[in-house]
Image (cartoon, rainbow, N blue to C red; front, side):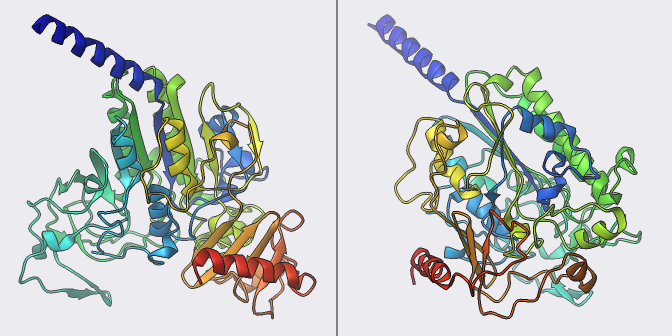
Length: 491
């Protein structure tokens, strides 16, 4: 009888192993503040070579009408990992010492994948909050540094686990620095810091480009901003090498680059034609290449779905990059990070899936990062749990080139401004889509007029750069989109 039981267990184990083997491994490479025009294959006039990402695009499908949920960081990351528009819950980023924006009752992408046998890891930038109260001492008092409120290193019990981070929301493993320009400046592994901060961050050297953008707060001794991307790249490669063929895995590799501080390593300095930012972008492309090489060397590349994208458009330093280096990080789009103009949220988006996605294809169909939740569920042969991914559309047929987009429209939002894209049209429910103020010289050289209407309307098929406000010519179309936006918002 015991022999029969052992045999059945063996058969079951074999069945489960074979079942796992049919599921694709999933790797998401997520850039930070990378513009639509920073991917060289999308910008013929680019001054920044991105050979590894260009090769990835040649091996898969590149979407030219892909969008993050927001023009800023935390909202886009939340929407990516939950399949929900961020504005249904919040609008701003998680600031220093901020709490988690993910509730315990929300199903995340890694939780969905774990429920289906996946091993999961988040390496790099988190920026979705932690429960800092769980390690903050009862008598801790905030302090003011450079006119900003923060806490000193003595305010926290660094030996305790920090609650409500990545491992509380579906990731088996986390390694990173949380946010590259926020305290604490130290390495995290799972729910603990590895090297306890003992001093306040003190930067004496000039930033390679722009500003350090580093908010004051605790730092471990000799924290090295330049070492961040090399370290997390090494960790991502190492984690891939530890994986087994009989269990599918999910790696969410969230870069800290090319976000400020723009800190290319010594070997990348001066490599591009676009300053420190361009050098940092080249280093980021190298990082992608290292991960892709690790997948190939591990024999995983034929059964791995690789997704590359970014959280929002480029930072305001992109304006000077046009003037100083003739490189347009935003490409031919209007606007930057924080804007509801296209340049704020239309982002690079590439998917490689050997045997499923036709190589060297380009799609202009509408797709959102929120769609990954439902699409990945379909890719692994499961259904989303009830109530999960409410704004996520299953785009599996679009990936395979079998149909157009499953998404009828897309809501863009940053802070108080909303826009709705449907078909060729985009309606901005504000007098303009700007938050990152456009310099007068840029406004003039690009021939942008100042809009005087309370809302604006563009035909993206003819005017991707959003020069010509058509709301006076097509008031009925504007009203149609205004009403649909209200419906989606539940107003």
